[in-house]
Amino acid sequence: MHLLTMNDLTNDEINYLLDQAQLIIDGQSNQYEFKLTGSLLFYEPSTRTKLSFEMACHQMNINLLSFSKETSSVTKGESLYDTVKTIESLGADFIVIRHPDEQFYEGIYTDLHVPLINAGDGTGEHPSQSLLDLLTIKQEFGGFNGLSVAICGDIKHSRVAKSNARVLHRLGADVVLVAEEEWQDPTLPYPYIAMDEAIKQVDVLMLLRVQKERHKNGGLVNSHSYLQQYGLTKDRERKMKPRSIILHPAPVNRGVEIDSELVECDRSRIFKQMNNGVYIRQAIIDFCIQKGGVLHENHY
Image 1: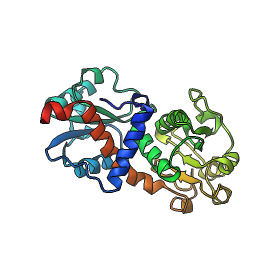
Image 2: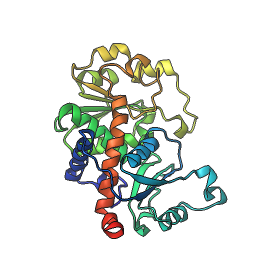
Image 3: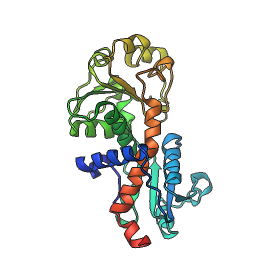
Image 4: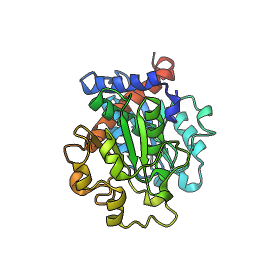
């Protein structure tokens, strides 16, 4: 069982993963009594995703094979396919990959005999982030049907936006988008509205980082101007619905997409999202290796 996009999961499987993560939060251990080995191959910088996968493995009693692009044979021209097959040959039971190329997994996953988990593919998808966002929303509202969710910011370059918009719509939420024209994504069939309209009507305000590294012009943004037009200011926060919450996949550009004082305000669930990331990734790893038959074939 690979987890490459949110389309790999049925609605029942999504809810199963959310329930399993919540059970872990509530104290149910999923630590293995025997040793499994995983490998995290990160070809792009990462703090939250990489470290939360590491923490998840630590909590589950899973060994990790160390990997650094800069000190690996990638610097000698080794292909991604050969690197992954090497890791599999060395005995890894699952492999987690973040890569700058969209759909990097094409031409790889069909030849793998262990689960492959996508930790972000360029501007494609980010399924584990989407699942931790869903977990955070479900903890607040108990479900998704009928919720109003706005995804705001650099939609065009955001894998988080693509994963979340589609799956939230599939689960019954009403999705709207907020972005300046050049950062809109025509592949997402959801309406664009103004930020001042969004903050008054939504239950969940999901902010996105301006992804400067993916912009051809180097991501030149006037921080103050952007915050006033498309960001969450203190004045806008005061106009939000009483129970509405703020999400952000981070890292946060304080003073750009959100006023710095709001990052840890009462509405913010930004650091709760990060905490949930450990538990949802434990659930993902367990789900993939169980579905993939790794436990049965290699350890029983």
